[in-house]
Image 1 (cartoon, rainbow, N blue to C red):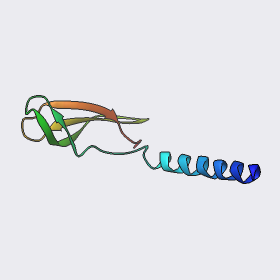
Image 2 (image 1 turned 90 degrees about the horizontal axis):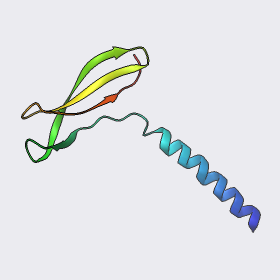
Image 3 (image 1 turned 60 degrees about the vertical axis):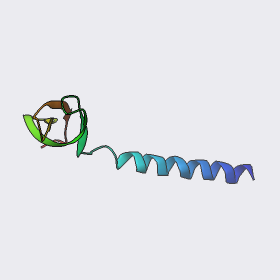
Image 4 (image 1 turned 135 degrees about the vertical axis):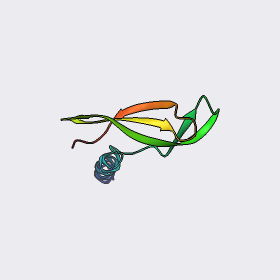
Length: 75
């Protein structure tokens, strides 16, 4: 019974690694805008194209306020 528990734990660890890998790249569709005082749709704008990934700025579609940046996938 202990061996079965170890096998199950090992299988869960593999599934968790696979699940985590699927969330390495994502894009925001809406973020909280302090100017509009609610979650708003965002527009992604590429600020810089770098060798190790693009620098992307998220702006509110309504008022244009910059809501955050992230480094995207490599080009």
